[in-house]
Length: 406
Image (cartoon, rainbow, N blue to C red; front, side, top):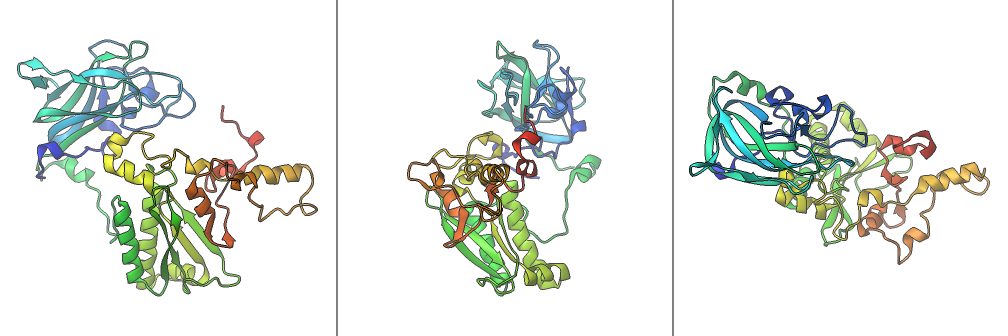
């Protein structure tokens, strides 16, 4: 692989391309804070002390601790990105560190600034990633991050990503094992807003008889919210034909749903043309609407910086600071209250629950995007969410007393 040393990509701690067996540490506080949890942007749950905590944490607080990555081949290392521990209750992060490299784990060389060991400045809080680039690239197989100082009221805890370019080695066994190859002729990558529009246009041109592109309005910054319809009669509402509408990307920095919908539209078009009977049945018997990016403003912010540096919050909300994902009207509570008062079928139906008046008032704190998403087209409103969560969050379709967050 040939690349400029300053542009070497993340090696894959965050994406799991680097597997758990490649991560090691000097000591560990407990299993849930082991080296395998020291991945950039990994998240902890609500409960502490479980098996899925939010960082690697050393068993002792002293300068002899280290976090190690085995690249399994000679690699041109160029930099390190660090975060503190993801936790609602603890404040743990490293404030400075050294970097050491080795080819055999016995002899280690520290990255230097001239003749002195280089101490890199690290984090000042637990969420914002900090990137440090080496003065010169260093070729080795193993790399260690050695904390030198840490938050004085916390512990040595880190989430890490390593920047590096693998050196060419066709005989390397591990390199062949780590290669991910697909036989599907699909566009597997992150798409910017412009690229997303282009992909939707390509799908429409490939399958003009079963697709239609339209927009439902604009985001806070004026970006159009594009959707694609897949049907044997696009643009027509056929009586008795089920309609399904899928949305993604309400948190702009959470990309998976957005990319899955783009892949879905591409996949359905390709398979329809190839004669896949299951896909043909879906196209001919249903009407499917795909809105891949509910929050394109947030996505563009996070995309520009990259997932390694955007952290948890950049791009999550709309431009005016509203969490679109949690901003839909709570229709569940209205229905459940009516059921408790035995109003159903007498004073109120158990379907087509109207949007509350307060939600539509001038002083309501409602995202512009939520307003346009609630109605894809005038006079054809669809409630995508209730209980302030999207409909695919199954546990949130239960009454509150049936589950406990704390």
